[in-house]
Structures are given as structure tokens and as C-alpha cells.
Image 1: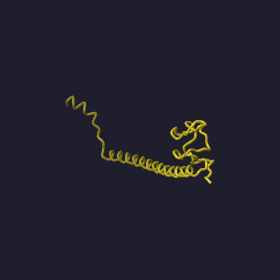
Image 2: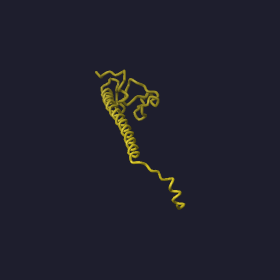
Image 3: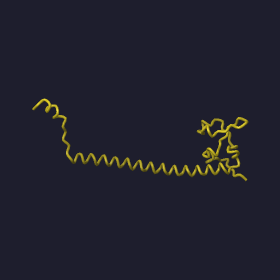
Image 4: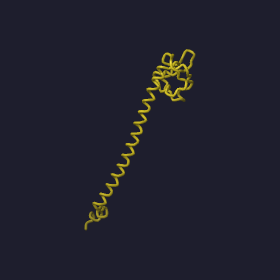
Length: 121
């Protein structure tokens, strides 16, 4: 036996076909489980997006029909620190008296749960 044959011999491992088949079945089962989990999460996300779209539509309706919506800004609320509330800076309107208002037609999400909503008369 040559030196090359001696060094190669220990690195060769024989695996039976049934072992390979079992490993593949196990890997496939794990894959299918993960795939099912992803499908379930995706379904939850789709339901959440549908709900958010309904809420946005309600917010837009409120922004257009509320008596406090004046010249596209909400006059009912003064927003001193919009950053802390997560309100984007590009939807903040600064009035002549330096109060900060939300441009509700640009950001109708602000109106979704507003407790001050009253319809225009």
C-alpha cells in the first residue's frame, strides 16, 4: 500500500442509502415545518395590513369630515414634541402663534382614534 492510499483511507466514510434517505426525510420535515410557520406568519401579516388599511380609511374620512380640521390641519391638538409621538416632521404645520399642528390630510393616521372627533355641521 502506498503512502497516498494510507492517508486517503481513514477519510472515506461509507453511508448506507437508508441513512441518507432518513437524513433527507428529516431535513424535508424540518423544511416543511418552517415553511408552515412562515405561511402562518404571512397570513397574520396580511390580516394586519387589511386592518390597518381599514383604519387608515377611517382616519382619512375623519380628517375630511371633522369640525376641527381647518385648512388641512387639526385645530384641536397642539403637538409640542412630534418626535416623541412618532409623528413625521413633514406633516407638522407651524401656525403664526408658533403652535404645531398636524396636517391631517397628509397624515390621517393621526385621526384614527381621536377622542375629540366631531362631524362638521
